[in-house]
Length: 92
Image (cartoon, rainbow, N blue to C red):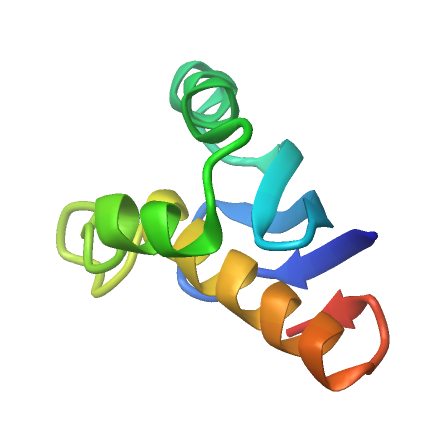
């Protein structure tokens, strides 16, 4: 199922992704640093929600308390919980 996550505290303003069970596919960032945000989706393709959280949660960008990678970890968890609980596909 497709999901959209509105980020907080990052240059990227939105993350789109697809879930198949607990595996993540087709991650796309809107806004942000192009090089990093082209690489991250390739690196997480097919990984589980838990794997992505373990790799990316807590990463900071400069003085910020979050980063695009950290926001992706939050996005995949929120999307997974939405699907598990049968709610809509747009998470914030």
